Image (cartoon, rainbow, N blue to C red; front, side):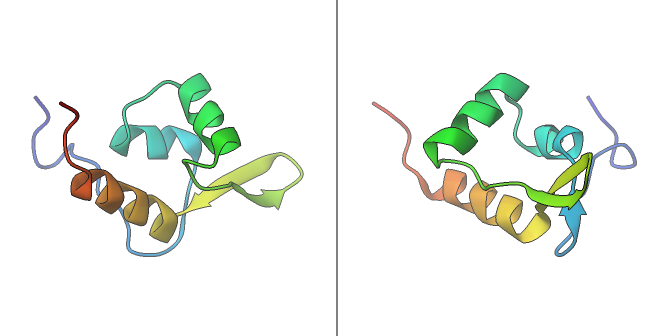
Length: 73
């Protein structure tokens, strides 16, 4: 179990790289990319020729939507 010091915190604004996103949404990279293709997850933002990131606001909204969904029965 992670201590409070080791727990990642989601910023309110800014950008997150994929490895940071996957700390909050524990799925595989291939599942994440599949979700982007299907429109379930937000599109990345191109910051440079070899750099992509995700808006912290989009990730926060996605996490909130997960919390609102009712469990499958």
